[in-house]
Image 1 (spheres, rainbow, N blue to C red):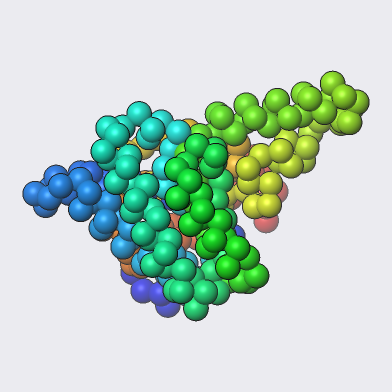
Image 2: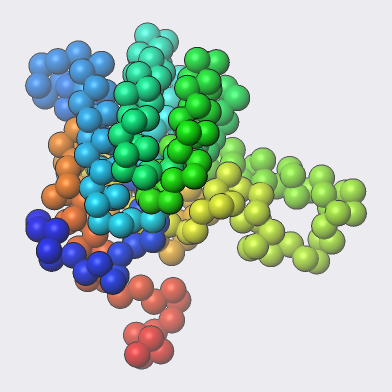
Amino acid sequence: MSFKEINLEMLPQHIAIIMDGNGRWAKQHGKMRVRGHEAGAQAVRKTVESAAKLGIKHLTLYAFSTENWSRPKTEVNTLMGLLVKSLRRELERMVTNNIKLSAIGSLDKLPKSVQHELQEVILKTTHNSGTHLTLAISYGAREEIKQAVKQISEKVKNNIIPVESIDETIINEHLYTQHLPDVDLLIRTSGEVRISNFLLWQIAYAELYFTDELWPEFDEQSLNQAILSYQKRERRFGKTSEQLT
């Protein structure tokens, strides 16, 4: 799929990706699971650079879910170590490509080394104005919504917010993604057709794109194919086709 086939005037503002299939890729290639995660990290680099090349404003990657903490301890430790290594290695590349990094999720549950590395890269890229890359780490949408409900309830209790004023804007302001627009295009790799507790509020009107490719196989052509599919769809937001025209 050629870059030239993409209509740059109709790009999705916010793309979110469920990066699935590292373990299966490793198994198919007769490798240990850690090699699959390493190959997945390379796919992250390619995808971020491809998004920046196109001019995608916001890219959110599901890097580690709240449910992933239940995986074998050795695998979790490997993933955390790989995350630290990737952040250190990619910092210079992010600065060069004008990419801004953010993170969402229960970040206080991450190992201190990960928190430190994450905050350092976030700080050093905070003034970049290109693609805004957000890593969802130790993230779960139900937990995010639960925390938002608690915060809003506390403010109602203390007469900071009148209950009558609670609307979508108020809810958005209490989510992890309060500084991000809603998702336009959600991509999931590996052939699985489910959302897996990812950005449940933010994908209300997103276009969903599922591919059989395993995450380490996902590349620039794969991203272009997903965007082209998005551009061929009619986004009605509850309206009829006639109303749109």
